[in-house]
Length: 141
Image (cartoon, rainbow, N blue to C red; front, top):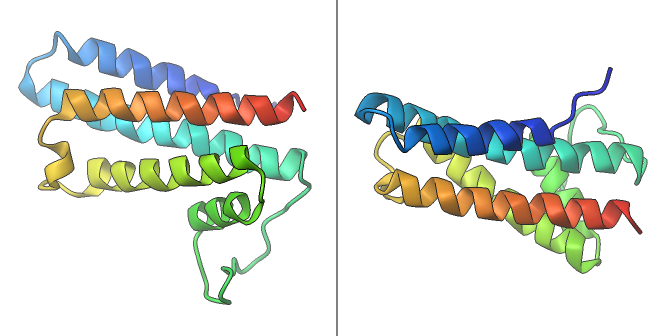
């Protein structure tokens, strides 16, 4: 059974919506998780696309463009960035931006980009939607 990564995007939107009426500790947790799930929705769809449509399977160990060892997240971004198609390029940039925000939301309690979490979560949802739309456009070609 194949997991539909866009379900994470749905969860992300639901969490952001629920956070509007939540008390502070729950609001912060819901918005941080919303940011994280939005990233994983785009990442999961992008990785699946590389596997299914571009027939790119991850080697072990993962090696970057300069021969260095990298993680799967960077590997997927690099594969999209290496393609000259505009949608591939934009997906790579969106993944990079979302990854930075996800890392801040998941690990960094004092990152200034999280000072206005409702605004940040809304921006992340917009970028994630754009990434998913672009990935869908690739599918239709």
